[in-house]
Image (cartoon, rainbow, N blue to C red; front, side, top):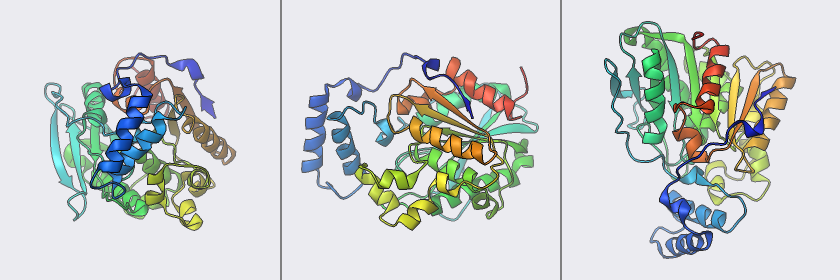
Length: 336
C-alpha cells in the first residue's frame, strides 16, 4: 500500500461564504430552513440542510459533501481545443456527457470524470467538476470527459454505476473519431462519483457487462462510502438511508470493499481529506484489503475541504503533481 504522509498538503483554501458563518448561526439557519421549508423532509435539499445543521453543531468540521460544485463552468478553453456537449450514451435525458478535446488530438489519453452530489444532485458542467481539470490537462494533450447519470430523490445506485460503465464504453467505442486512445483512460470521480468509480473498479464485471474495455487507473476523490455496511451500521446522515436503504444484502452489493475482487487489476489512487473523520479511515481499510489481494492502491491524505479536493485539482501545486505522478506510474501520462 503506497501512501503519502498526512502533512503532505497544507494548502490555503478559499471556502464559500457559508463556511465563514459561526457554527451556532449556521445551525439556527439550517434548522429554520428545514422546519419551515415546504419540502422539509421531502427531498435532498431539505436533507442537505439537515445534514449541514447536524454538522454545524458537531465536531466533525468540514461536511461539504452535500453542497453543489459551484455554478456552471465559464472557463475559457485553451486555444485550438474544443468541446462536444451533451453526447448521448443512453435514451434517458440524463445519460449525457461532454467531451473536451485537446488541439489536434491523436491517440490522446482521457480523464473520465464522474461528478458527485450525494447520488441525487450535481452536474457534469459544474465549475468545480471541470474548470481546473480542463485548464490543466488539455494543454498536455489530454482529453477530459465529464458525464451525467440518472439521479432522483430515491437514487438507484446500481443503475448509476451501469450509467458510468455505459458512458465509458461509448467513449471507448467512439475514441478513434475523437482522436482518443481507447486504453489510456484514467477513470475519476468525486464524492458520490468516487463511490461509483470505486465500485466499478472493485468489480470490473460491472463495466465489461456494458462493453467497457480495461482502463489504466482509477482516482477516487474523497469518498466516505467505500465500506457501505460499516456506514449503515453506525450513526450516519439521513440521506444515506434514502440512497442505501435498510437491506444489509443490498449494502454489500453496492459497497466497493465488499465487491473487491480476488485479483484487483486496476491501480487506484484514493484521495481523502483528513479534515473529515469519515474519509481517510475507510480509504486505509480498502487499501489494506486490496493489498492483501495483490492490488495496488495508493492513499493520498490531503489538508483540503471535501469540495476543494475536487475543485482545486488541476491547480499547480503538490496535490495536482501527486495525481499526475500516479497517472505517470499507471502509464497514463508520459514522463515529462
